[in-house]
Length: 326
Image (cartoon, rainbow, N blue to C red; front, side):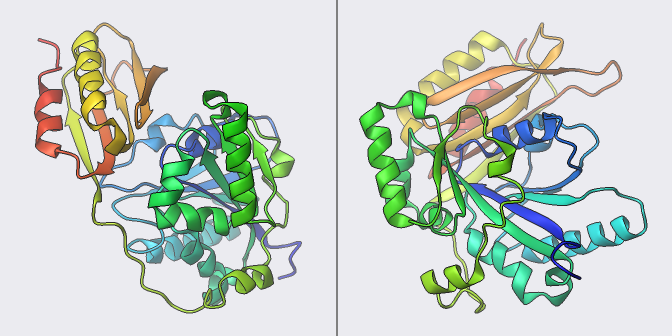
């Protein structure tokens, strides 16, 4: 196939809590005329982004219980193959793919998929790797996590989120650091995912030769490991939460463990609220907002996912149980 006939693919990456799902929501909600298939991957046994995404008729495929760059990479190849088959049969209509990786993913092996698998490379064109960077937490994150550095290094576009939470001089120092790490990727500040689509889609930003200059072994098979200190756990319940109890408990846990709570999010059933509550947080920053209403026949439940360093899982789960409404 010529490049003009191939299906362009955008890899959307960035560390935990950088705003990938917010940006993806904006892409899906905007009236841009693009038909998009979304593949999303979450680090943990259960995903909640599928509930958070406000999509229309887009095809969304979730991949859980592993990082897209290691344990479920075979699933990525399989899903891309299935999407191709259904598209060719006329069962699905899409003209591009967006892959949202987990915040713990090294994007290198994900991009590698589009060059080492003949069936994928013949049909899909890797258009660009777009990396979101959280201005509030980028400094220590880049210092501590190899994956965050790889996300910046492989980026064709860098979108800087949460600049409103830092001083101008701090943001400028971060921009200078990012440019030193990756001088070929433009850096642009975004507010709640408000980035022009022409700077994200169809930019033909991925240059294999440039990547090989940065990392000569890019096309070689590699073994990828995660920091064993980082783990995830899930809390599920079919009972409603007491809002005051939950806020008090989580606030207390943030004071003690906030520095190690890399990312936490969920979809909650709150007593007295006819709508589900979408709950998200990064380190000490926590918030929630009303989502879509619960359906009349829909089973109400809460699912919360926590990703962090050596968090006391038993303490969190027991405390959350105490926050349920009587």
